[in-house]
Image 1 (cartoon, rainbow, N blue to C red):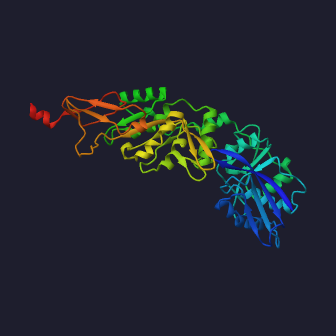
Image 2 (tube, rainbow, N blue to C red; image 1 turned 180 degrees about the horizontal axis):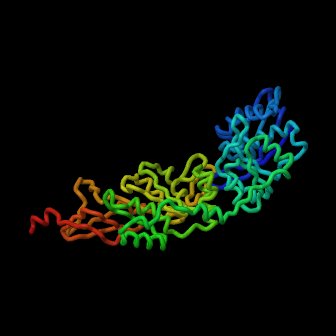
Image 3 (tube, helix red, strand yellow; image 1 turned 60 degrees about the horizontal axis):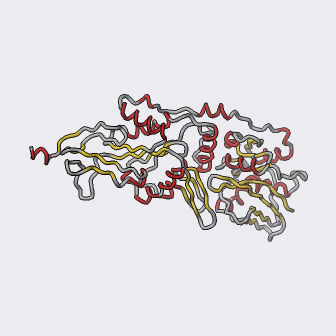
Length: 418
């Protein structure tokens, strides 16, 4: 017997429709095969589904073979979100749905061994795909219901267990779709734990941040440890304009696909602040993988990407940021397909002033030389920062964006000349 259900798979930050075809009796006895380019998480769902069906009081087909096809078969499927639609397909093959078809409802969810439904990644992208393909309803785990319900035009149902999903199919009139007020969710989520008013003094620095944020410019911090570079950078999102609903939905999609969305919020209402460690790889920063996943640049979309200890980053890592900074998007190409991720963020680039040149001599400026930071052009665009002095060595707080505030002392050679 053949039964079909609808699901979705995420590629990049977009989702596409997947038809789950379950056939019982066509394969060899006791065989349970999943085809359609599944990854390991999808293949392992066989054991989860068997235990969930038994523990929920449903029968697993004994003495018969089971074949499940995930169409389209030429695109790789990954994740545990296919557990629920595959289990419902097996239930449907046993006649539990009394001839009802599930061609207008999409199902997502990971099954635990006791039949409860766990949260999955990309529920918001799946809701947008369901609306695009004309599906009327979407059933997701309860933890993902709020983020999926933000999408208008699709009835979203929250599920706690496999038996509840079966009841939803048999008697949908007894269930109420989840309704949310997106604007209210956005206002409740737009709460920051820090504020720029917490910083006392540093008026020149605050003014520089205001100018950079107003114009959407990148910014370079230079100063010794404890000068306040990280403290100021953490507060940049608080002076950016409040997020619009469209920006919030776009940001939530990225965070949901990456698995960093807080289930209780349902919607990202604050500007993202991402601060990757300087040992990060180029794929971790820009995104990548066999099935492309968002990197730190995409996770900082509509917010701030803070590169602490900039000189410690590898050159190839900084080089890959050139195209995202210019285009506002990240394009990841693979042999079979390309994925485009969002990548529009303000960039903060901090470094310490006490760096040493390749010859081991402290960086300083004299009457016939200039202090030039030319190693950072790849990350900051075509701008190069130069600081000139007259026989004085920079020995204190210095910032390319603070507009001054250097504490200078005469170099040893100039004192001897006097």
